[in-house]
Image 1 (cartoon, rainbow, N blue to C red):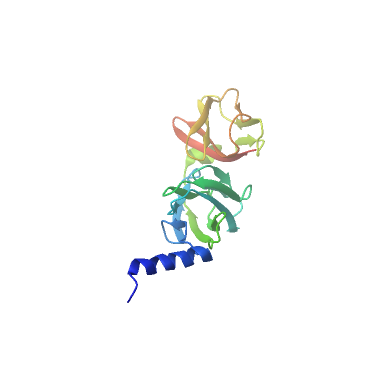
Image 2: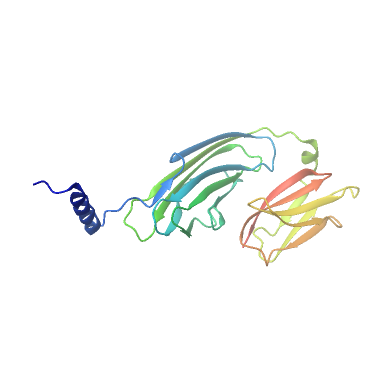
Length: 236
């Protein structure tokens, strides 16, 4: 007599469990290769490449990502953000975070071309730690052209100095002006949040960076709400 089907399914499950054969814990919400082709019309423009890694298992998973391959033009600034943090690439190239069952985390690469045309290639390896699963790979490819025309930005582009960079405790911003403009200087994190804002006094201002998180930040200088300069700064 043929055994009931549920006994056969139970036997197969038992064999797979004994051999340590499990379903993949992680999945990627988009194709494993992403391409971005943009034209930068502003020196402070940021481009974003975003995908999501999802924990499709019923248990929490420790997820690790690390940069497998990285290339981009000199003068660009790149960061990679997950659910727990944002890191400046080249400064740090790996991170581990906890992902609850059925939860997801974005893996977002941010590009600041800083007015420089070029191409970038970022290959990220993603692992579920403590498992025998094969790693996942995500490739971010970017081509950026530049078409920037701004009289006010040209006027001030060579008159702004941000130092030291990287900064540890104090960050100074010096701007040469004719004394008639009110210049607002903002310190902004990688998520676009304004950490501090100051009005320039005697052509210089300073920010205390000793009590903020390490990572990549932007310095925006504005006159009459028009951004005249954006600089990227690393806080260590």
